[in-house]
Image (cartoon, rainbow, N blue to C red; front, top):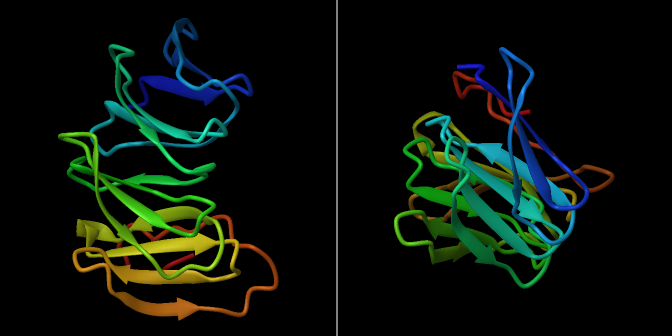
Length: 173
């Protein structure tokens, strides 16, 4: 609804401004080090941030309340929500994709297959497929429900840091 502008700072703080007035609404000191990635959920109320402090913070944008702080073995550069905001997917430098239950804040499963840091994600419409990009110079497409690898797009000359589905789900960039 274009109500807020959210920015992440190098000191681990999240800044939230109201777009209509330009007024700083709140700051959230979520991480102890810089923030490497963030994503707003489809409900426009939930924010996930990935920090250099090896955590992912899930917060309510309107109240500023921290809902979960999810520990990782090392830096988690990428995050993505399912459309129903019931699950969160996080990447990690250990090449694992982690799927978190946002009702409990607990890890529900991992998806393996990359050979380098998992940097970014996107879901196809209706969360049928999960696309992931990695420092192993691939983009992989997964059946999200089963975790089965559907295909690997190789041939990149360097690490791949971003991946997005088109709104209709017919194109992956």
